[in-house]
Length: 326
Image 1 (cartoon, rainbow, N blue to C red):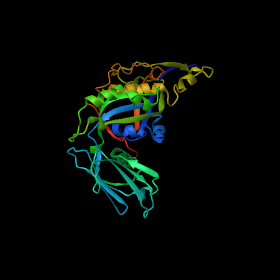
Image 2: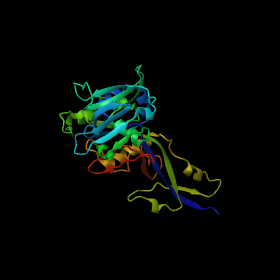
Image 3: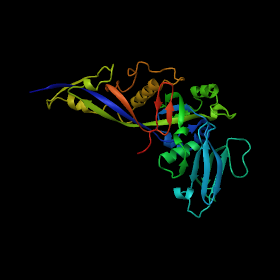
Image 4: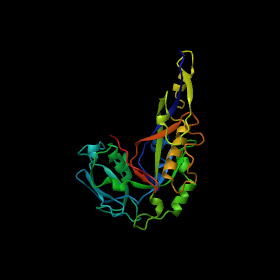
């Protein structure tokens, strides 16, 4: 006996960061680095963020050990950090390194302790580049368990960002999209500095990029009403248990490749409609009814699973907490 069934498809989209939060100051240097460009090339969603400027203070080097604090001139106690390059594979315990220190001030310190430090680079004595760290990159790599360091203090105090804008860039290289970005320029111009120093806000504006790297789907039948989110109109598939009926296989067939543009459009709409950033003119108030999203491909409803997020992102409408490796 042939049984007729009805079902729906749902989708959970997976996304994660591939690189730390990058300040506008750092972006100017990194956009010419091919290795970083390659790492971020698959990223199709970007956030324009702001927080008080992070910098290294009281940086000293002795006996193969670096000590410094990370601060931002807020009322939060600084993070007191100890970092040993040899324990992280940059050199042998008895090997010397060159440390190139970059500053946020025109006149650099000539002797320890070094203050107002924007970043430091590690090189061999033959000037072979080994690695570099800004405060954000240092914290990111410690949290991502790529780097071993001792940090005393509440790291979360220094990972809190205000979201100004969320956009997508799947139709062009994200570096080209962000270079000369008109929203970026507006934010750089209009936003006041958030810390107490006489630094320009552009140094505090930052970028975070998100890679949408796949999805899981759910095939829900013969009943599905229990799974519907409020207000969602189901996209119903009809099929039978007849082995000659191709509709069941068609129903179970995934409707999108892992990095389909529809996934980026869906994630942009989910994030913008949730955060409602003040510089986004289109807030997707009719979500999930959007053009070229996952409903266009036949999925009734979507959810977003962020697998790695090294920052706390907030607007007055929503807060996204830290998501760190288990």
